[in-house]
Amino acid sequence: MTTSPPTEETESKKTEPTAAVGADALPDASALEDKMPEWFRSPWPFLLFTAVCGVCFFWYNNAMTIYHTDIWSHITYGELIYNAKAIPATEPLMPLSAGMRFVDTAWLSQVLTYKLFAWQGVAGLKFFHGFCVTLTVGLLIGLMYRRTKNVPMILIGLLFFFWVERIQFQIVRPQLTGLVCFTVLFLLLASRRWTGWHFAATTVLFACWANLHGSFVVGLALIAACCAGSWVDVLRRTDKISAAFSGTKFRRFLALAELAFIGTLLNPYGLAIYGDVLTFSNNLNLADILDWEALTIRSAQGQAMAFVALMLLLVYRMTPRRISCAELLQLVGLGVAALWTSRFIVWWGPVAAYYFVLHGSAIWYKSRGGVQSLEPLERKSLWTVSALGLAFIFFAITSFGLAVMHGEHGDFKQSVSASTPVDAVEHMLKDHAAGKLPAGQIFNTFEWGDYLLWKGHKQGFQVFAASHVHLVPREVWRDYLTASQLGNGWRDLLDRYSVNVVLIDTARHRGLVEALKNDTNWEQSYPPRNIQEHNAREKNEYVFYRIKPL
Picture 1 (spheres, one colour):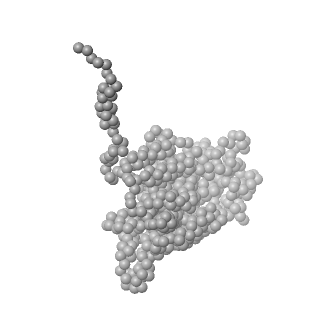
Picture 2 (cartoon, one colour; picture 1 turned 120 degrees about the vertical axis):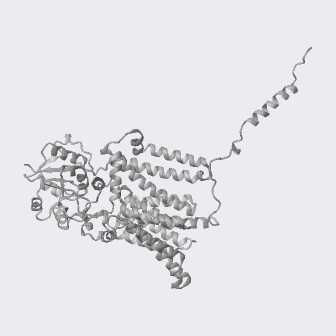
Picture 3 (tube, one colour; picture 1 turned 60 degrees about the horizontal axis):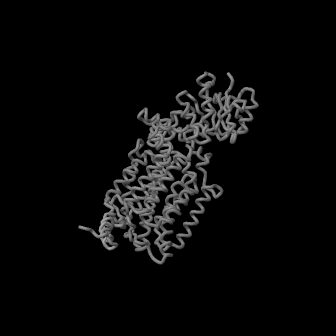
């Protein structure tokens, strides 16, 4: 039996089924179904804003140094409180402030920073810094996006926010925990739907806030502004006082204020904490501190605030949205407080950024010929997984992530600001260990007192003053200013306080440095006379540490 050779037609018949089977075997990527639960999926802006927060967290963990030096006294107070399981009734560290009433409204923040430092060193402090700033930014982004869905405008608002807060965000102090609490409260107040959860959360928030930082009174003022604003809005619409008092929002905010007040009473001082917090700024010593000076257009913060305020006026002039009285009270009240003392700009920043984005987005949508689209963006688990992976990468490459996962702790001197007198104090400790450091009072630049307290309180160093100048008796503070500025009788003041060691900087105390250099009763111990032996890293190369010869 013979077989005929295959023809072209029969050959094609043999190969066609095979090709068809192969095509059916390949999955159609467009038909793949996302089987992850709905709650796990997110829209694409989630990935973008995760990247923004990741960069923020990385920056404040790795690029920023530990500044200002008052963080070291906070850690020292936290250590004392943690070990004693009690808050001292009087100032425990500075001998010249003995007997001064010690009201510590930030005791919980101090204990937390102490435990973080004890656990991971400066990496722990950097984590505290980065976490507080990033959490604030993340909460603000969430609120802006929920209300506007306008990604470009949110990014502009964030630029304004960081510009206004740039200097405040450089400083590591318990105030950062207060800012987090403030942002959480602002988010709660902006909620459109209220449940019992909001009232419970506000009470718990203020109970924590009153122990983390004394700025909880700013939160109460924020609620009061919402309460008063809602009352005025109803009065304007109805022209009836009775209707204004019976308004739903007014009653809601009033109940919220009552619960917040109750929450603040859960602190070691009870109701007495209000007297100390509200009169704190009246302390005369604060008038000599730069942080508590009035905000002016000459400062970088003042210029940033002025520009953002101008942008706010512009969007308020053009916005199609209704302007509530509450938001005006918040912006004007916090703005006036910032002009009174620059420390309040930290609370004005998030409020200004939010309302800029809110009204700027309204202008944006109107210019595009319509209103905000209610159509939700497509949600994919891919964006969520990518965001989680990105968040882990940013965590892993920070100093804190390297310390936790690999035990890699960075160099201490490289991690703290250049204004920290690391080398000078180490030299002082060596002299103390060798018995070369004379006993008695240490006259120091007051900003360096915090670091001296942290490094030397166990060695019995008698620090003249630290940055918590409200704890320094008024007479002692005046004498400090007189001596540091080479005022009349400065030598007698040093003798009267039994000052045997002087640790000052040349930038602000050049006159005193020259006077001590020419005084035969004093000798220079640090830096060494031979500058080649001096390997200091301080911002001021000519940091002087002087001891009186025995």
